[in-house]
Picture 1 (cartoon, rainbow, N blue to C red):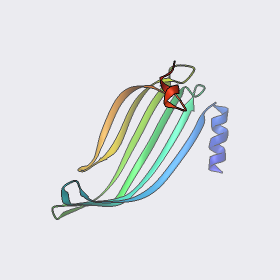
Picture 2: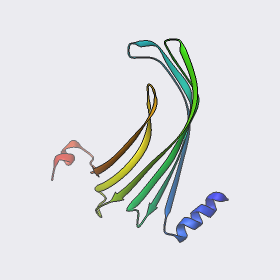
Picture 3: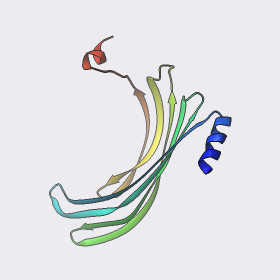
Length: 137
């Protein structure tokens, strides 16, 4: 019922909406030479994608909820939960959709926990079926 309401609302505004959810459990032991490092936990990810202006302006927003995170390094256990947010704003520059510019903020896992990453990017995308097609004019 709520999804029907959102779809009808987005159609009236000429928007497109896409949802994505995932749940995972992870466990890592002995990263590299550090055999005394272990880390485990659970993670829920939810993402929303909105497309505007004939799919040329794309907004991605998401969240990660990490709970039950247990990390032990040299026999010092820690336990934490984290709630982080991510976003990306992307604009398609050309009609053939090959060139795009994007601004983003995301949170990535790190041995010491999580770190925020911010950026501005320019992308080129080309579809091909073989390497010959990729390098031909």
